Amino acid sequence: MSKEITSREQDYSQWYNDIVIKANLADYSAVRGCMVIKPYGFALWENMRDVLDRMFKDTGHVNAYFPLFVPKSLFEAEEKNAEGFAKECAVVTHYRLKADPDHKGKLMVDPEAKLEEELVVRPTSEAIIWNTYKGWIQSYRDLPLLINQWANVVRWEMRTRLFLRTAEFLWQEGHTAHATKDEAVAEAKLMLEVYADFAENWMALPVIKGVKTAAERFAGAEDTYCIEALMQDGKALQAGTSHFLGQNFAKAFDVKFSDKENKLEYVWATSWGVSTRLIGALVMAHSDDDGLILPPKIAPIQVVIVPIFKGEEQKALIDAKVKDIVAQLKASGVSVKYDDSDNNRPGWKFAQYELQGIPVRLAIGARDLENNVIEVARRDTKEKKSVSLDGIASYIKNLLDDIQSNIYNKAKAYRDDHITKTDSWDEFVKLLDEKTGFISAHWDGTDETEEKIKELTKATIRCIPVNNEQEDGKCILTGKPSVQRVLFARAY
RNA sequence: CGGGAAGUAGCGCAGGCCGGUAGCGCACCUGGUUUGGGACCAGGUGGUCGCAGGUUCGAAUCCUGUCUUCCCGACCA
Image (cartoon, chains in turn cyan, green):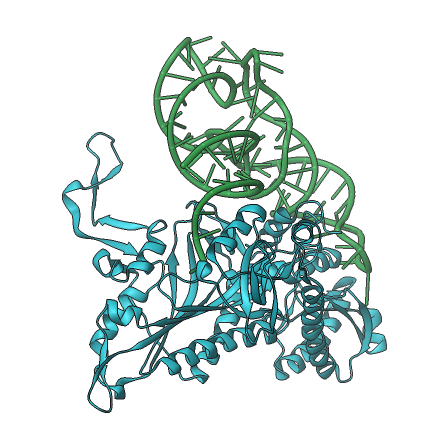
């Protein structure tokens, strides 16, 4: 049991915070609601970003960068979107400070330097981007326009949590323009598939693809698609969203194109994003009471090697052997760190690297050298095994694959076990409190019922799964007729 | 933004009521012994007690304000 980390049973929230801090993913900062992403956490984000970036490019997208600031007049152009974000916008009103005459050595906002028009710090970039697209799109030959940007955004949250909800966060936002509705819908669905692929095959995070109800939909969208994941405390977490925006932004920003018949039409739009919140999902989906557990495919370091020795002579022999092992692993594309620092003893290192979620640990001492073996410890199951050094690289490669799928299967088994069907309101309430997870129940399709259920239970409709089975039934709350079940859960 | 708790050495905490030389454990430095699951001995370094005011001869301690964090709530794509 870790000395550093609160157990999940004792305090799940504290367990999460402990892991984020103690595994060196992030740190608190002097700015309310904003965190520092530390090198280890950022390396993880870089790996995730690189994979996603390649997936975006493989589906025809290119990167660009748009400004951090959005003039208020542009921001408010698409009314629903603006209203949706209005309450959490940071706004720049002045452009200069000056020495404060009443407080020596202090600065004050210069009242003379008020901006003509306030600048909204982007909570998302639809406005500035669609204002720009207006100048880029004239003809159907300019379409589709498939652009992504990696950026920071600011949402002035009242209550923040490391990675899960911070005032500033990093993300990517794709913004595409299309000639037809069908093509835009297809794009939104395609990117949902990309996100699901990334979550499942790289993050080992099983997700449910679905569509949001009107109440949960992105402000300004016609349809919001999402991937929903389940955390170990039974709460759902939205891990990514993809929006079909219809012609709402095209109309708000007057973006028209000439089609083949030379008719002027509004373009069709999508936007889609995932953020550093995914790191929070990763932590909460896989980790245990000893610390972080990372899927090998995105772990910053896949293998750490710890030498165990008495005296410099042994150390030299081990160094020579490890040098060879490191070369073999690197040649096989495995990222590896050799920790031969003398600051800490092996036991300390073992605990530390487990806390940081490094998938595989190798320990090697004089005894192993004699027998031409090495001790292999896997983080996910904590199994240890002595393995021959002959063919060690391919053994490790296979092991990393096995760990990747084991982590996924474990998360999936938990998730699948926590999707419960019910047709009884009493059971619905009981399940939310006791079993937790997703509850599959009939809903009459109205905002009022959804809102009422949220009031009564704090559960929201996470999504209507794609390809949802159609089945006649009665609404869990009102008893009114329903044609399908939807997934409810308490959520982050 | 409302309610609660916290902030004293890098980390974890004591001290605070009852104002009077700022302490403990871990970490760090030096030396030595060690090294197969968070080593041990000895000797050291390190703090304007979150910040700003106030009360007082004197404030970590009392008062006011403020900042940051955590928990609960409201809010949140």
